[in-house]
Length: 437
Image (cartoon, rainbow, N blue to C red; front, top):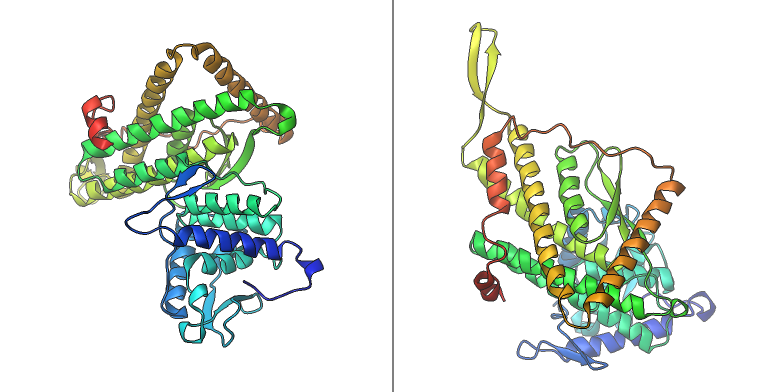
């Protein structure tokens, strides 16, 4: 799908193209009536591979993907910040990325380019830009898998990894979830679209329960996997919170930390709160990011609704012109930070409650409680040792204290609204959870 090069310079090219042909066949076998495909005995529901009528429509999709990467803080060494354009090309056999002009050239429909006017082909070419790689080696493939996930196509990424394996390609250092992350994403999307707060909280509880059950299952599986078979190990992954100087970053970090705690992740935080490094098993990190990105959107939206309501805390300040104390509304940023603080605290408490309830249910299962306990203890030790070594290796000794100067007391009404926004329903309500399913 890019300019042909000598085989020695791109030895994986043919296998990558064959794998993508497999992927295209799997995606094309799904319909609106039959949205799933079965591969190696497992059923997947990837969603459609978007089709375009012309390169200009593909350009609109490309712009939307790059905007999504930027808005969600995804970092591809800064390349996601660069503009990439799309043009038509005369030849019908290839789609090409031209790094000199950051241009993707796609054959239009009228010359036989129907095969190229689809999302996976556009993302393939965008991967050349984001990875900085011309060839289709391991680094390029890892970037493509990551891009599919960041573009909202985690199941497509999983199928592509299966296709790579079927073509004998070396598995890259990128963990694609086995379907649980896709189900989690669906629950979180349902939470975002819920028509009332009770439904939203029920979906959130169900999402955390799914995350905990999946984490426990993986811990038990790791305990059964011999070291020589290369069992999953803890990793460290940097996650971008926002640009330096933006107000509220510390509260965003606190929300992420509370979610991470409920999912067995340890964290280090940059001094300016612009980034967090997540330490733990890849599957738990993926779950933590998915929940955070969903809740962050909800938190900001709920806060903006509160600020637009006109309800505002007041504070008594000295008016030098009138020479007396007067009551004035607190600053918007003060109300916003108080809302975020309360919201993050309550979300953390709710997720911990959902996690503990799920663990309690798992521990009482007959003939599994001792094995589960041992597996979870081993996982805890693995993460603890990995995190301790990271602290030692990076000479990290201090503690993060950026959110210790609370705004809750300055805007108690906003804080109360933050609590309500995160605590609308009884998360243990079985009827609500049943309806959510």
